[in-house]
Amino acid sequence: MGLMNSLEQPTQQQSSGRKVNNTFGLVLRVATAEKVAVGEAESLKITGHVVSAGSPLPAETLVEIDFRTAGDKAITNFLKGNGKKSLNTLDESAGSFITLENCYTTDQVNDAGLPVISSRWLNTLSTAGDPDHANRSFLEDVYASAPRLSFKNPTKKAGEPDTITLPVNAKNVRFRVEEDGARGVREFSREWAVGKLNELPANARIGVTIDQIEPKAAVRVDDQDSFHKAIRDALGTGTKSLAVVRISDGESIRARSVYVSFKRNIAGEYVPDVDKAIAELQDKNIIRNIPNEKLFGAIEQGLVVEVIPGYRLTYAGDPSKDNNAAFKLVNDVKRDAAARYEMMFGDDPMKFTKVILPGIARNDSSDGFSPINVITDTVGNHDITELASPHIAPPRAPALKEAEDHADAPVSSAEPGSDEEEPSAPRP
Image (cartoon, rainbow, N blue to C red; front, side, top):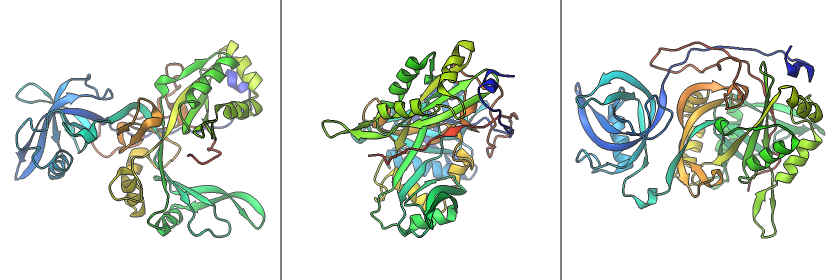
């Protein structure tokens, strides 16, 4: 019997395993780009240096990129992002950065001896020499759940919520509502939520966000004081900070997500109310059904407690204007064209996927970063208890989401289960 079984009543868990393909995402600094003939069609061939760290190849490796499908669309996307003249010469676009999806390493090398990577899709992250792209960057080594849309119910009826939050991969959504004087939880279909989204006026305010966490930055705590410090550091980043508290006795893992509310400081600025978050953690159990004093007392017996930092990032752009990432995501959901996100994140809004987040960086902190896209870094949809950190390694390999091509794949299983706390207030 594990240590945690002595702290709480054990609960039954399920496990599952799925086949997975070993594709990955890539950020590339372009060296050359050219149109090439593939049979009777045209495609795109790019050489460049690997920039992101998630691929099987070390950073700065010079590689060739070929496109196994939709070569004409690769050309169109490249010209759209880098300009009509970007393929006039081999090095016209040298120094631009692109993101590549569904990549895998082939067993080929080109005439120059460069390893060849096969990709399916590209987008331009930044164009060389464009001053408007000087603040383009990307986040990597992070895990994210599916993006979410949040908006006021435009035609509220009895038994419906005031505010609707729709994860883009959700099949249904649940809200606490009041009907006939009684409060309870009611489930609504995705079609209902999308219908409400389409009823919004053109200038309606829609929140477009994505939650990301960084397991590699987890902080291990050894007493209540160090726990409070770790929580303060994680939640103090900004008004949309979040933290994941995980505990493990080496056999099982429990988790709880904590979101920070906000307050106005003396200067009238919105700041994270970390003191309130810590007070609430002190007043209630940090982990459901485990008294706080028992939790901290068990650390001396070998219980591992860690805090993983994270942030609820807001997509770049105004969702009401047809020129940005936020608008495009909202429009995809309105048109029922969000299958890409189900492929990436599965159909469970609570699962996490390792991603690369291209975006706009206004400063060096998470609170100054706004995504313009999301691409899969490593294929797989994981419960929050299945993610490895420097301090906690899941007892089994995580359950993985099936991908669509390049079918060499292992099969594995995992044990999901977490405690989730939703934000108690809207974000400024």
